[in-house]
Image 1 (cartoon, rainbow, N blue to C red):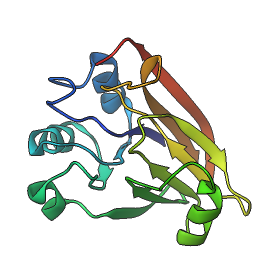
Image 2 (image 1 turned 30 degrees about the vertical axis):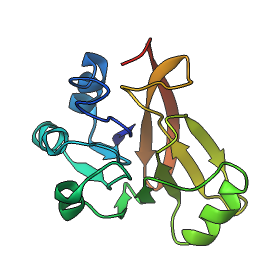
Image 3 (image 1 turned 90 degrees about the horizontal axis):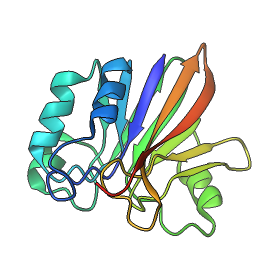
Length: 167
């Protein structure tokens, strides 16, 4: 199973649309996972229309219309791996410990908010993944997103993809 992880798209504020390589990744993915800060309902509608399957949550910049359609925390099992998707996890200091305590029945936590890619494993095995942002690089050298392979209950290759420049 091929997953695409994205977050913090901020459409249309940071970009008018997702970059073409991200749309190509949407088309190739079995599941698209979005960790919040969509900003517009149109962005949610576009991904719902094009993705084979979409899992997402709302972020701090998402208004009432998006919050009515998305949970604060999305939970899903994909290919035998238990995922939770949330926008914010707090500061980076102590993140693994806090998240392991907050999400004890989860194998992988996908999060956003910082626009900074993150890939770590908490004591006890919880994998934490932040794909960054495909449209707003902030302090990062490139815009980013992740692809993940899941097979028979095992999280396989996690790849961070880069797009040059800002959004």
